[in-house]
Structures are given as structure tokens and as C-alpha cells.
Image 1: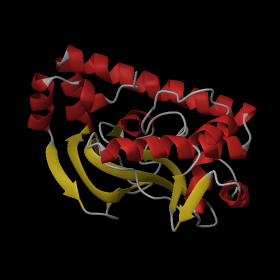
Image 2 (image 1 turned 180 degrees about the vertical axis):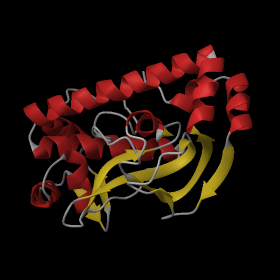
Image 3 (image 1 turned 120 degrees about the horizontal axis):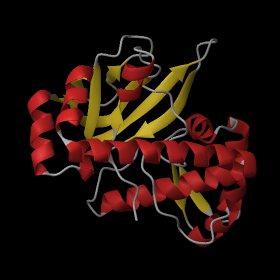
Length: 242
């Protein structure tokens, strides 16, 4: 069973009610939805497409903290906790999203019990995923976490080919390293090793899995696990509150 996304759990009545208090907007590829450090005034509900949540280190390096995709909510926690964006959110390809004021979004949840329950399930899954990732960091090597990430990305692309959703963006080695909480050298070594053994094939910013069974064994998975999109295990670490 797939983990719940917020928008996908809502019924037609909740969709209409949220659309009524929000503004729909198409963000072109590479455009910025919100910037780290600015006041949190709006919540974004992603209807299609993917975004990258990026933070900047003291020395000016950008760190990819998470990917978020269709059905996810961005900015709601920061609005309640810090009041300021704790990450820059950038469109990875065209993104279709609803923008609702933080107060309007809260009022919407208060007025619609089914939506409030869906939101609680969604947030609970994100917390579960963050805890799962922390456990993976303690028990798995960087190569194992990378194998898990590649398997999840591959499954997402397979779903996109079937028309179920949009494909996740291609990622650089630096971005892969950020998502698994490892170094670029770890990613480079693992990819080189797996390529030489015929487990993967590579092209610029793309890794094709040639031997899925062997990669599952490397990842420590006896069999494929249910996917958790974007706020969840491998795809999204314990991301900042956007």
C-alpha cells in the first residue's frame, strides 16, 4: 500500500473547497516557489510536477534536502513553527500548484474534518519517514542508502511511464549524495563499482538499473518495499520545514 499524499486523500468536495480559497499557479522549470529566510505567508499544494528543497550552507553550498511531488504540501510546518522559510523550493520541471494563505489553509482544515484527518495522516507519514531515515543512517552504509534511493527513483519513473504521475527529475551525483546524507566520493565509487559489474548503466544525470535483483540485495531489501513519495523514506530525508 502506498503512503498517503494529502491531495490524493481528499474527495471532490474538499478539492472544490480548497480551490475556492487558493490560487492556482503554473511554475516554469527552475523557477523559485519560495526562498529560504523569507516570511512564510502561503502554503503550496502540489498538483503535478516535482520541486527541490534546497538549503545553503555557511560557505555558500546548496544542499538538496528533499524532493517533493504530486499531492504534497509545502510550507505548512514552517508557518506554524518558525514563521520563516527554512529552505528554498525550486521547480524541477513545470509545476502545477495551489497557493493558499497559511491562515486560509488552517481555516480550511478546521472547516473540513475529512481534510483535517487526511492532513494528520499525511504529517504522521512524514514523521514516520523521517524516523525511518534516521534509522537507516545508523544501520546502513552510504552505498546501501544510495541503492535504496536508485530503486525508489526507478520505480517512480516506471509509474510515470504508465501515466500515473510525472517522472522525478534527474539528479547529479552531488544531489544524490545530499539525499542520502553521504559524500560525493561515496556516490562516485558506488556507481563506478555497480557499472563495472553490470548492475547499472549510466548516462548524464541518469542511472539505469540493469540488474534490479542484485541492487535490491545491495540495498538490504529482500523484495521491493512500498514507495513513499517525497515526504518519505529515501526520497525525502528529514527535510527542513520549507
